[in-house]
Length: 87
Image 1: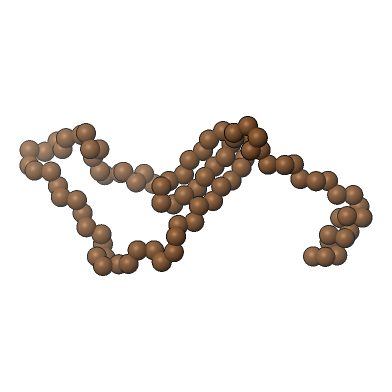
Image 2: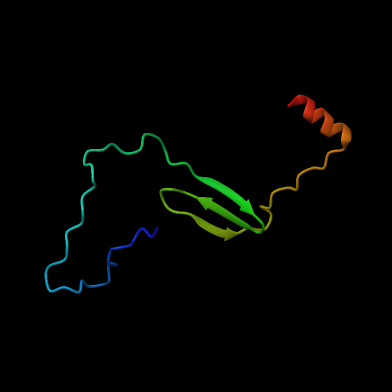
């Protein structure tokens, strides 16, 4: 859903002849803000880095040279068996 749905942009003028509508107050005034800090998550997909931030919004950008994650190591049969036994 678009966060700006139903709102006019700052440079747009209302179409009616009356005064602009006052900004709406939160539905529950006095509600405390979130208890903890916002959780920011970074995800690498292909040649892009996606940063998900609920406060500032999400952004996607190309990976910078030298920041590519290492490829996963291949395990032989003995290493796979040891890992399965450890789990």
